[in-house]
Length: 190
Image 1 (cartoon, rainbow, N blue to C red):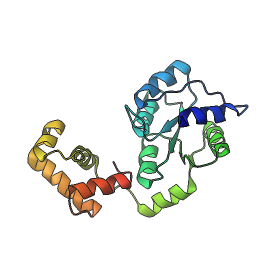
Image 2: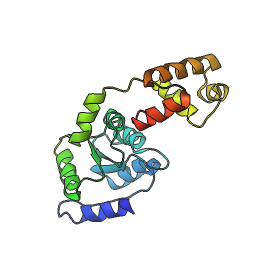
Image 3: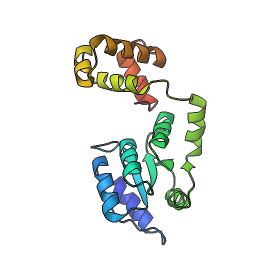
């Protein structure tokens, strides 16, 4: 419903044509290629692949396509990850529709567009302290899996999993792995 509403609002702009819509992150690249999309609007939360994952794949498949990431979750970690994956803009969904249309125009001119409040929060918070492997292990632990099971899924020894979890717990300031997962998700690090 939100996707269709945004498409309808953007379609009212005289200089913007909505040429495709998809409901899943794993459909983004194919749709962008089939319709020669100039700007893709991606939600952080999408089934199949997250908007951040889809942005990374789209950047590789169609380097010239501009990417605008929209989110309900104004978390600094999401902003940082979206920009690292190749996004040209990062906006929260509660911004006025006119701001979204202007962001589309600006990225087409080669500008980067970032919600200013979120940019300030990201700068204040600093970088994600977790390494990519620590994020992988912490994400795998989110469902309550035992270290042995996580190790099998990620092709790591149980001791290595324990070491990565310990580092992630320490870096997040958590008391245990469950709290570390919660903190990392709240900050947008996972």
